[in-house]
Amino acid sequence: MFLQVYYHDVRRIYDIYLLGFLKEFLVGSRLPNDLNDYLELNDSAILAELHKASKDASERGHFPAELILSRNHFRCVHEVTAKDRERDHEIFDMLKKEVKRRFGKEDC
Image (cartoon, rainbow, N blue to C red; front, side, top):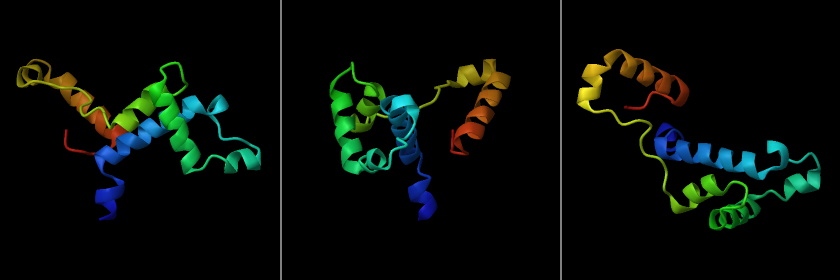
């Protein structure tokens, strides 16, 4: 069950979106050095900032926040037809290998 929950492809993409949001939201893409500022970054504070950013395109982290809250994640890295595979078999194999190397061995 651990693998099915923690390594599920949909859950993993939301980790990537959350990381993207935090990199844009946090000053200098880093957690605060001050202990009190750090402790203020709890789940409630981050969720409030996600909601705020998702509603306003001018907010830092708007795009990943919108993807997270609308649950509108990308479902496909690259779509390839059977004709594409025949024509560019070598390129397709290289792309598939690189995607698996970077993101894990999911069924492509």
